[in-house]
Length: 354
Image (cartoon, rainbow, N blue to C red; front, side):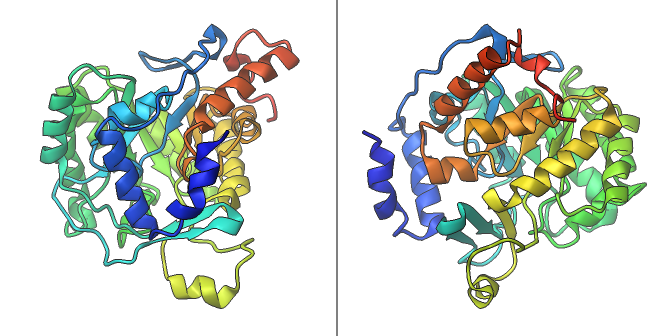
């Protein structure tokens, strides 16, 4: 019996942010389920000098403070990306700032990088000890820091967290920090990434560095972001963050408008995130690995991302909507598809649909 399906109506009666914090607290306390994930060597994926047991990871935004890394690893994720964390503590945007769109398997959030700061996360990661899975740290810009000082702000976070992570992500694509997406502009992004690359190389040589881009970029902006990542010697790109679009929702437009600004995630962003992923993959031509994010709530959706260029995939909203068995279901489904298409490894499936 799927206990989450039974519990979901009661959980969804709670405000979305309340349920989020309760879930993280439960997992942090060691009260979450532990999922047995099939060990299929064909699913192993390399990211720089790292090896993930299978492609499915947890996207940033779920465990913002690195409080429940072991709990999320227990759900079967091959990698857990914590954050987004900023150099300075900040409360984020006023509540309410998270909303469910259950009929569309979607969420809207405008948390605004609420977190206790990089120094607090560093202490938690030290207390974590041996990592239960590959650990990524997603870095954002402190809200009070102007864009012309963004590089030093990111550098401060790298100095505190770079050596405590297995890989680091520069987040310039959240729609919930004013001006943040301006850092994706051509020229600005290259300078930022080059500076962060130099800082990470100085304090943690060999750590992979990635950038996470928005699904709302025009084609020219996508191409410029790819070129910046290559020029800055990054190790990968994450496609994509949440969208500011409200296209394709089944809810009344007035009801949606009343929820206000914020990033939309889940099933409605799946097609656009896959289209961005495919464009990035074609431009890169396998020079960098990609992580696909956006609307992954099944093995079919994960396989779609892999076919369009993703070596790894990450879930967030799908976990909220489908529950803790999702990772196991996706991993089993990927193994079945390797059998079906007679592929020797998951890397053989990357980009097959391009």
